[in-house]
Amino acid sequence: MAEMAVTVAAANGTLRTCSGVSPTAPGGRRAAVLGRWRALAPANLRLSSPAVRVPRATSAAAVEDWSNTDIVPIPKVIIDQDSDPDATIVEITLGDRLGELLDTMNALKNLGLNVVKASVCLDSTGKHNKFSITKASTGRKIDDPELLEAIRLTIINNMLVYHPESSSQLAMGATFGPEAPTEEVDVDIATHIDIYDGPERSLLVVETADRPGLLVDLVKIISDININVQSGEFDTEGLLAKAKFHVSYRGKPLMEALKQVLSNSLRYFLRRPTTEDASF
View: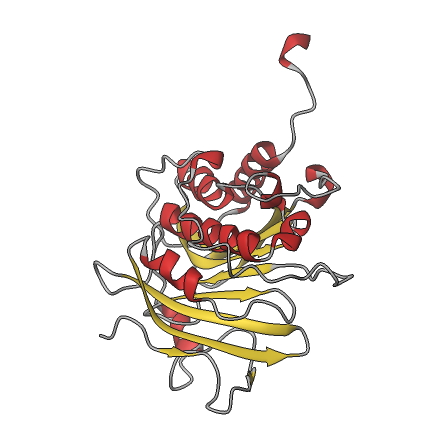
């Protein structure tokens, strides 16, 4: 397998039109993917929120000057485990910005990954930069939550380096960027948890304030109550994170009582503490 096959633009230098935000597997296999989930590995989750080691951008010389731009678009990073059974799809959008992403691809290689395909397409929402990535040691898609979170933070870090104006639009700007967001998201208001039933598993949808390590922590909380976590999608949209996980208990959808336990556990973890320890 070739390590990298990049189809960034057409030969005339123009971007191709997006056929859809989320790519489908070759031969229209999107529907068939539903039966081929790979479980995320819950074991040995030791990633603490601010302690992720992220490969940094190699050069600041490529930073583009957007100081004259009034409106900064909301940055989006989507990690999609659903569309392709053989690779993890990563999509990055920042309006009409984000030119060549060779530095980001090199940073992903430093995480032990192969970028087997990359493309850029254009629609009304801007440029969609998409990567198909696999683990270099196995040639397969990534199923380790810690590595998926490292991928997310690596991409966001590079975005902050090359587009520092996006710092105030990202929750990670407070940790990695030159400028923290001007407003803090109210976690109690921003957090939404929904669980939908399917024939063989349930779909867990979580929306909450973003922060480093969130993906790993969510998987750990779910696994700690003996619920099987399967692949899904994790989106970073500015200050918010949106996760979709297919979950099951003993190969079946979650019972109502277990749904309540899961929802309460996640809310307790995600809720911002309102009581100081000294008050006890």
